[in-house]
Image 1: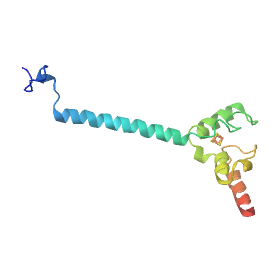
Image 2 (image 1 turned 180 degrees about the horizontal axis):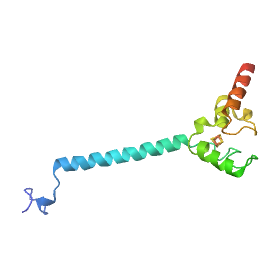
Image 3 (image 1 turned 30 degrees about the vertical axis):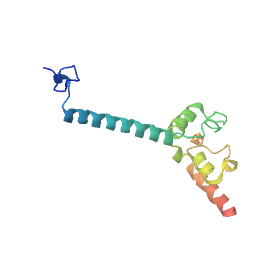
Image 4 (image 1 turned 120 degrees about the vertical axis):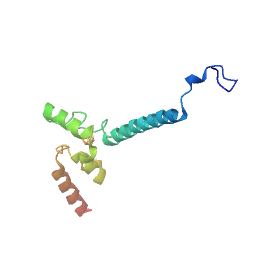
Length: 119
Ligand code: SF4
């Protein structure tokens, strides 16, 4: 059986019902949205200072295994919890000393409090 519209040459049985078409469209849209959200979260979580941070670049003295764990936990997943990142964003790069590591949030708070008092 040919389609009612004579301009189309293929049989109408190949047409999807409108509801199925919209359902597929809905699924695809959801998938795309999930992928975009995931990418956005990943970009937001990953530290933008990877290229310049001495800790991430391996220029600070720290045990190799510990460094890898900290990089995976802070630099690649959650920069907001990194002590170095916190001091950097609150005070600037001059206040981030080389004895400050990502897991030392208490020390970061002390540095921030001391330097904000002095300002
Ligand atoms: S140590 Fe902190 S500031 Fe340095 S790259 Fe990792 S998250 Fe960023």
